[in-house]
Structures are given as structure tokens and as C-alpha cells.
Amino acid sequence: MRNDLDKLKSLGAKAEVPHKYDPSVLEAFENRNKKHDYWVTFTAPEFTTLCPKTGQPDFATITVRYVPGDRLVESKSLKLYFFSFRNNGDFHEDVVNTIYNDLEKLLKPKYMEVFGRFAPRGGISIDPFVNGGSGAKWRALAEKRFAEWHGVRG
Image (cartoon, rainbow, N blue to C red):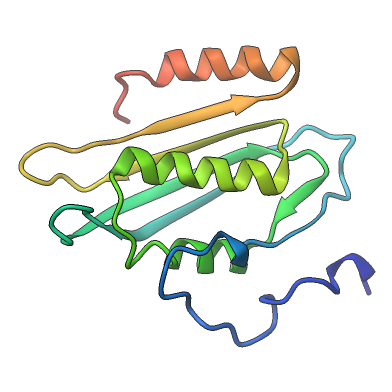
């Protein structure tokens, strides 16, 4: 049995769904494969948040990709964290940057990117992308990925 998982509160337990934005529900555990660089990808195709002006729901697919450092995000806590946006009013760009900032603070990954593909409203879709990395190798990747992603809708 892994002792490093004892601190996780959400995994394997009944968890209450947050009713407001709450980054404190995010949990992480030790990366036991630190000597390898590898990708972890989460896709949340049913993400919802609210327009800060009208209160109308905004629907998105949020994709988080990262190369872990010392820690990995626990997936159930990430799901609860995403739920916490359902009653939160913020612009699409702010939502994606908030997710990036909260996960970066929790994980300190080598590289991470967050992409939000929001459903069109008023005939326009807004698809924000944010990324970053630590160390020269990962900063170079961040610059390359950002340049590739700019203007691309895939």
C-alpha cells in the first residue's frame, strides 16, 4: 500500500460538490517516475461556468496537458475543482488563466498548457490557450507550442 496517498481526502470518499469557486479542493500526490519526462492529459468535455455580466451558462471543453515535476494532480479533486466553476462568473480568458495558475501553484510542473474550447455565443467562439515551462528546454517548448497554437483551431 502506498503511504503517500494517505493525505488525499477526495479519492475513495464521498465528496461534496463545491457550490462556488474553490481551489482548495485540488489535491496532489508524489510523482514516482520523476526521472522520466512524460505527458499527462486531462480533458473535461462538460465544463461550465457563467458569464460574469448576464449570468448565462458558458459551456466548454477544458484540456490540461502537463509534464510533471515532483507532483501529480489527483483526478477526482480536479473534477471537483472544475465543478467549482459552475456558479462562478468570469470571462473565458480569465477562467483558463485561473486554472493554469492554480495548477501551476499546486504542481510546479516542468511544462503545462491549458486550452479552453468554449461553445460559441452570439456567433463567436472564444478559445483561450495559456502555457509555460521551467528550465530552458521547457521555456523553448512553451514558446514553440504557443506560436503553433496561435490562430489554430483544431
